[in-house]
Image 1 (cartoon, helix red, strand yellow):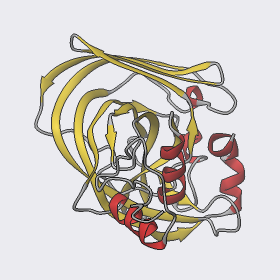
Image 2 (tube, helix red, strand yellow):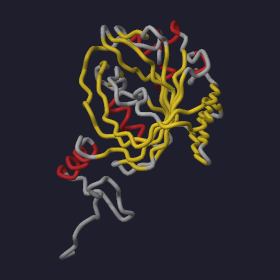
Image 3 (cartoon, rainbow, N blue to C red):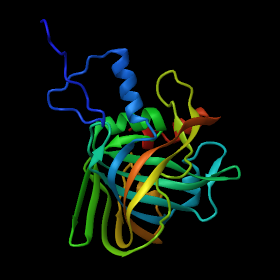
Length: 268
């Protein structure tokens, strides 16, 4: 039709109007990638985390790591449940994860053996671009009267339950995503599995201590109860804006035995 402006497209911020439809052109695809991965733009706004540092079973945790990566001396992990109310890829979702505190040679880093989301777009992007082994789960999140109540269920099993009373404001907290990672990328198809490193940039909005009660469950496909070995050592509540930081770059190859050992966590 003469004068037809064509399909409505995604906004520059990554929020699609209800009547938006893709044209599937090269220019549109490049614009979408640039928008999502532009370090000058906020990727997540007001991302909110309730997190705890917990002791882990060192022997068990080491079996979940690729060759060359070992648990750090303190044998701890960061466990969180998060709410993401705005993203630049048109999704709002919730997430929960375990980040093991590790060493790769002389370098300290984090490795993610387990992470779940309640949105398929976040699952696909996290797996394909950053090596997070995301799976789908039901995640509840509520904040009322200074108390955060959050829980994670998967396949009928409650895997995490956290109740946190928000405390005093602090000037700094241990990093969550704004630290070097050692994740495994390319675990499916014909791609060569490889160890990658990357980090994000966080801009704190609110940082507070928290008093958190944590309950850990487990199943064959999500055996968190065999990894986490004790009560929280520290806890906090934070809200941040997040930007793209260092994009993934390879730092090593991954043995097929790693993929076999961790198959229930990564793919089931």
